[in-house]
Image (cartoon, rainbow, N blue to C red; front, side, top):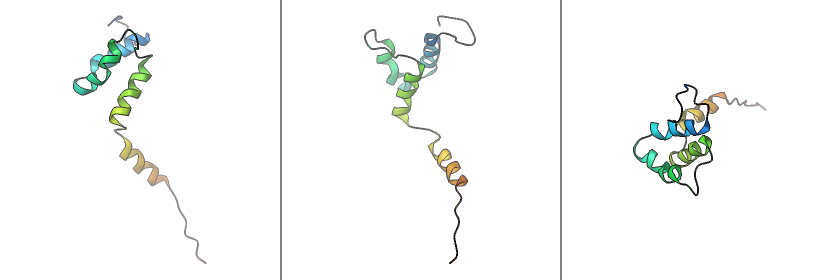
Length: 78
């Protein structure tokens, strides 16, 4: 870590924290760009976006179920 601030005020600190909190395949997905001098990640949001594109939305089912439960329909009798 470049800082011991508990709030990780610097973007690089947040990026470091995320990268080092990951393990295995998730960390490998980010490794090349994280270590790159020529084409590094621009920020934490880009790192998260890369992980989301690789793994999808883990809450997709529950979010769809919640949206479905909020739908209301009416049957009009003729």
